[in-house]
Length: 320
Ligand code: C5P
Image (tube, rainbow, N blue to C red; front, side, top):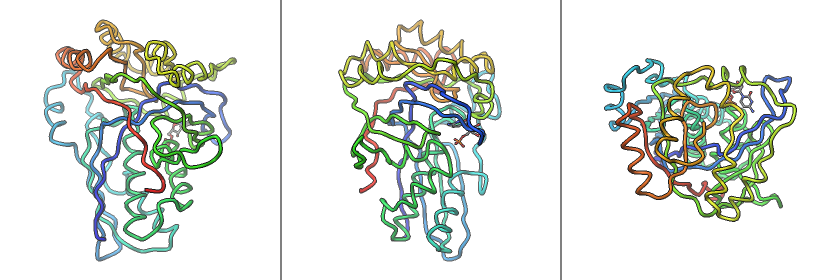
């Protein structure tokens, strides 16, 4: 096999709480994540030599956004190229771990906004790990993928589909995961009765490290159990009442766009309006597909042109 093309999905954090600040600069967290059907295209091709080349660009559908969004912060448009992209690190570290000197051409065509809290870079890295494994005849369930993935970023194991059931067996397919530790300890959780999510991205991205640094660990952290119970029961209305994100307060302080966007979403009668990850994208649950489509066009008309609706996805099985 010479080339592998995959579509790497985005994620939303329906719940995110911080439990402690760790000595290594990370936080112990508790988060409920769903993979959703907004994708970047990831192509990994073997090279004759041992170089790794990464070319990342926005998909043509995003070009319209780049020209028209009022007040657009230039950093929103930047995608790291070459060795600065996590996709490069993924290929480089996995080949080192398996003792290969294979080279790769990696092309990313992105529709997941960057600096949005939607896990785009981590998802691309997970897709590259899986592609390199396939191109180098490494089994997809090899523990090396998980250990390299966890070193690359806290969300990479989630996108690798490393979800485990409480009994420790691979859970596949799963549509949601409870992540603890740094985000790398995963447990599959039940999910039913989801309506579409409306997601919107303001014209300013946020740095994950900056948002975490501005966040206080609460003396009494909230628990995700009520949300998980509502998810298992398939009660969409109850679910939205338990959407929560501890990082929302610092994100709102760092960017005035968060409050503007959340207010615009609430005005459309969307439920559970919330920040995903460290932002700056926000999401909410629509009552129906029709409500989602109408909300997306109204948000776009109000200047939030990167607005779309998504549905939860099964995560890739480690054994596929
Ligand atoms: O792991 P990742 O590279 O995605 O993390 C980016 C930044 O987010 C870290 O440098 C850290 O500042 C913050 N972070 C954290 N605790 C976590 C995950 C991320 O403090 N569990």
